[in-house]
Amino acid sequence: MTGTLDQLESTIAARRAADPSTSYVAALFAKGMPKIAQKLGEEAVETVIAAMAGDRRGVTGEAADLLFHLMVLLAEAGVPFADVLAELDRREGTSGLAEKAARPKG
View (cartoon, one colour):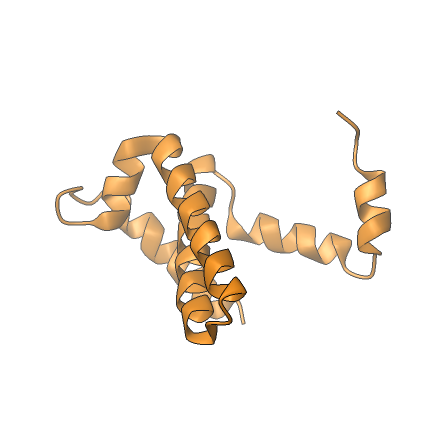
């Protein structure tokens, strides 16, 4: 399942240094975290709108956009996708309520 996202992470890394006038990924990185975060938020909202509309095809497309922009944000933040997977593995088998209650407050 992660092969596609691993490949996407590699593609994003490779395109990071490309010419922003010819690469959407490079253009996002050139604009920095504020723009990347904004795009991620926009895609999240669009995913929610499609879901609320019962638009299965729309949800699929918007979810792909959401994952793409999340991967760009992770790269900009210096967080490898493997770290996210490790965190999910750590949480596996733990009640969501218990995991949330165990988080530091504040």
